[in-house]
Length: 282
Length: 293
Image (tube, rainbow over all chains, first blue to last red; front, side, top):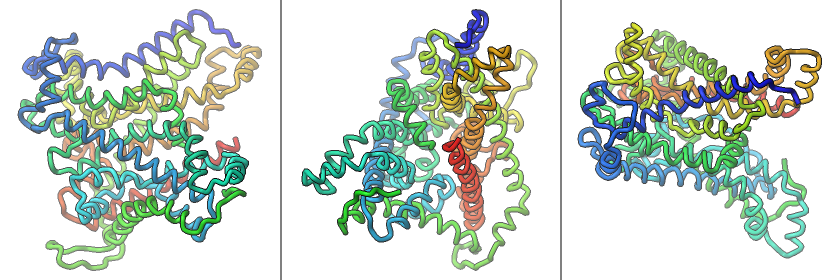
């Protein structure tokens, strides 16, 4: 063990707490601002201590929305974000795990070309093909729909590669054994492979949920109706260009509400989160 | 690549790959192909006729000083975000790697900003540094800085870089910490026995052993700065003042939004695609090397 002298250890603690303060400060300010009076904030007189409007502001944010820019309750936006995030996470896992299963456990014509067709999608995020994708979604009459929000974001190979990699490490003996028991491909997948993949699925779910919840550019383009807005899009529309009209406490409350689910997931499921993050980057 | 023990069923595998294949073809290949085709076409003002113009759209772009400026700006942003975020995260990771009491708590308290969405990051930072009502702007003005990122392009750029780097600290921290923990303690002990002081141990032993992680994170951060800063820019400055915070992705978005030149917008998309492919290629090559490392 390399010895650390006491002094250096104190320095480390101090630097870490400074780091934590820097990381937390903007969020602290947001929480504080969401409990204060708008007039005070607009004057640049915001206090750095909590104000007394917590319930009032959050009630209005969740159930009513701002009075000016977007008259949409943030509760509804959160619901849209939730549906989108779940659709992306579950959809991606579902279609990826079965296609990875086919590619690893079956031999069929065009297996490799199909694998490459899926693999290449790893390269391009939706941002580089937004307008052509927009046109397709419009042609399919999927604007302002959950399908339009989630399907184009499901089209990527990360999860497929992950499951493929995992299936390759599953010992062949398991398949032999379940064959001797008379199980066909569907039974084997359902009774053996799926239970084994549980941790991988959970880790992937955590990452995909966060990524899905935080999507911005795509929902911004394809939602035109206020009641289909996700929270990330809604918050942008609350900041009006004429600053005087921006209702900052509500904007900040919305920011806090937008952070809550994904941050909660990271903190509570830290192990799965770290695992998912490291594995999806491989 | 494939198992020894496999199933011989004929139809089932196709049924299993069909959903993903369908989605990928409809929402990935078709639009990508459209972008490539469109980038070679020129549409008249009313959208009634199109002509094939070879690389005219691309040449037009490269002749456009605004596009060239956006390229330079994007690379500058990427570089500034990557360097500032990486160095701060490395400092924190080195500290958190020490055998300290409460190191798990430190980790938890440092990784959660990963989950904050880019548009929210933008909102948080513009609020703190808003020219008229920001809590931090008061202090900036008190020390004599004429702070107004909504009017001053350089200040707006600094604000974007700051906010984007802030968000990326947690990600970099996590990977640095993992990288540091993978370094065998015996190597550091050997250096200590040879009389190397902590600072020297860091620069001659830890840092070189960490170089694969650093390189990997560099690529990831550049890709992040290319794409994920969109939400930050759009909520903070909307590309302004003027065009001083317009990046390549933002330009694709805003040019397309104005609805004008489809061919040019498609050409911009294709150029971005090529850039990402190159970056991903670099990353893959590197990851291959890390495996055998």
